[in-house]
Length: 347
Ligand SMILES: *Cc1c(COP(=O)(O)O)cnc(C)c1O
Image: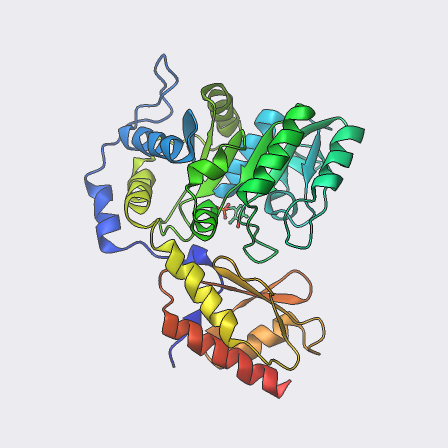
């Protein structure tokens, strides 16, 4: 039986040409800094400069994970008890936690609401900004736990205006930033012009084995580099990981629209389900299935799907998630849909 594995886009494996870049990568000690604050690993420097150019920021910082990139940003902007505006389902709050943990960052979350399209609600944001001494506003684009939904340029512009009015910086968790750009049909630079800093992952749909880039002003990145070191994230010959990441940025950005299309295709086949509710507007490479009224737990549902050759993951309390990436074809998407239809029929 062929197994269709839709648990996560972190399952992407490096291709041979991607791996081959490692053997010829120019390496050095990224922890030894020159007068300009740059390390000695030329491959990391090249990747950071590419990331800065793509996002339209002055500088980039290579981090071994998205978690490290986000947390380095939070610890650079904020101090203990600093108030951070987040949504309740945000990855850097709910999954990563470090900045908000009583043993570590001790920052305080302040929650903003979504509108019906899962974009930050402007009236609520303004209310929170006006009535609190907020240190930082965090966005997530695409938004993972609402099913890969995007914040569009109009909303980003409006949020920027509010943040400026109350003089609060904006950090964007763009783990899947390039999927958002593909859906919105804009460059990542256009998206990032509205935020002070952004983190994106090369280890998800872009297909590199390791890493994320944090981008922002030169001054911000200089400080974030010190923060990254405090968090244990300084690298030595990290060019070994940066080389495949460069390959990913050079070759794999365009194809993300295929992943988005396969997710939409799968969802489009999931009509007339009896018990399961499919996410209404699938935008990027994630499809959420709501099992709240299906009479089965997400864990049990995933176990049944596994028996039929479909690997999916429980998420939140009553949902399961399907994620599309380069190893998943349009046929796989169709097959995944028919397995879910079959299971729904048996509920
Ligand atoms: C995956 C993810 C991260 C963190 O990336 P890791 O490399 O797994 O640490 C951050 N934010 C979002 C929204 C993610 O989906």
